Image 1 (tube, helix red, strand yellow):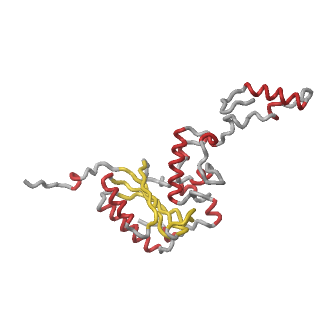
Image 2 (cartoon, helix red, strand yellow):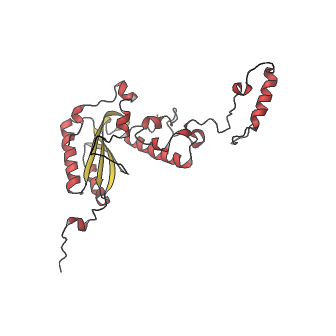
Image 3 (cartoon, one colour):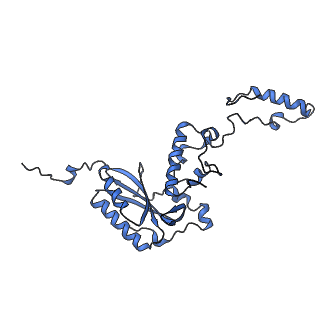
Length: 151
Length: 110
């Protein structure tokens, strides 16, 4: 007797969708083109393999780190919100860990209401505080438009 | 004398006012003694500035606010006795400060 699964959703319980937020640090000795390629590959991995979707990708700038990480004193900070099930987090974790350009990663579970339809756009707390940040006025944080991810 | 780890008792205020008025001879003036005499002491629980911070503001993204909770000399987290936080709020602060230190927004040491 052969058991055939008619749909992939029957094997994995895809009805569970949770929202996760990720903070990724990329090394400073990298160009914007390589980061765009890495992020597109990662988001396509999430949509195809993990049966999820990416809603938001923010760029917090090239910031100085308070201590040295693998020879880097500055890093590019990216903030991503993902909606997917809990079954594929380990694969996503392994996928990011093997990438040599990523220095640090953080995955947390959140409950965020993102209103894409309409005029209200979601902004994280860090993006709201960026214009009034002291470090930006001193010139330590640099925000270039080429590093912002465009869907 | 004031009690160590004492509660917010107002019974010591009258004793302080009487003690100071005898020294300063303020009986003929129109000055309010309570405004001149410090009504707080080292061992009371009135010197706590951060107890009014809301729970929603304690996030790892508000690293500038969490930086004020650290001691300047050693970059350690302020104790609950000095900050005035409840047990739940202090545990949340510890969690988000550890996240900031991992991401590099705050230092571990000076």
